[in-house]
Image 1 (spheres, rainbow, N blue to C red):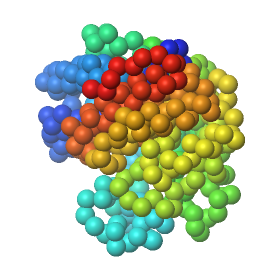
Image 2: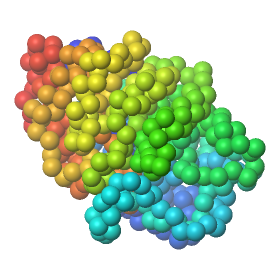
Image 3: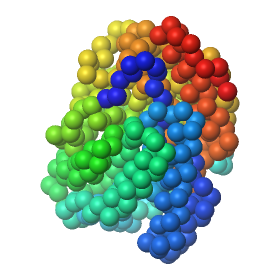
Length: 391
């Protein structure tokens, strides 16, 4: 993974608020419109070019395409895998202990949670990867935009096996485990293509943490850890043969604007996470439910080949963090794991779904500005050199 040499590098988790034209097109596509038109291709290409340029101009070191070519951080993969079908079921939604304990709060509108579904994703045939045309389109758009903007360090996100069609069932494979590893084998093709293109692969896995809220209780922490171990084994299978220094893993709690009292604590899964064969771990550390967990690294040894990409600004509140607070979050962690092993980032994406905005676009860019300015202040403190004043 890219280590710091003379300054604290900056990045983010991936999804950025889409231009309204792209959002409108996604809605049109869901109503029967197509995404293969020349007009859409031009719109997407231009939008990626603009968002990469904005990141570079702002001072972000490791940039991406804002995930503009995807419908959502994980459901995009439904178009890129064969073998899945939507079979009718009783309406079901994502309702865990947090939603039960705060039922009146969760009953409020605009909670940003997925609506109840009247189907279940079901594996009915062999799972294979069929998404190369869309993947290569996104790779080409990102590489062209990066070259034009002068960005040398570029990442692209892809979903983890555990977060593919959460709660899916299988009618094709003999066991759920066999189905899971078939998904992992299919995802390997996407992962390999991203790395082969010279990009950094980021694997997104929000459902890994969210599952705890959904299953405990009645299940136990031991049950949950067993569930996690199998999913991370599948992820390692999907990562086989890829250079660790070109990969990073993002795990979060979703962090929609809710209590999150029932989140799994990082200390209860960190030993399992560190078994994932990647070069970096992007974790929430600005979220007030989890910010205190930076101290965990005083007693947990980060593997020597790995770096941390802590979230030092939040995606879930319109309050813009002060650069001095950002710098404090960076420096306290850098003093534990080493200044060369902390790349400052965001807790999660600002628009995990195409039409969803966690914050207003102007606030998003202000937060990314605070991220860059805070990293400059941290650089001055950690390297003992001057830093440009926050803008």
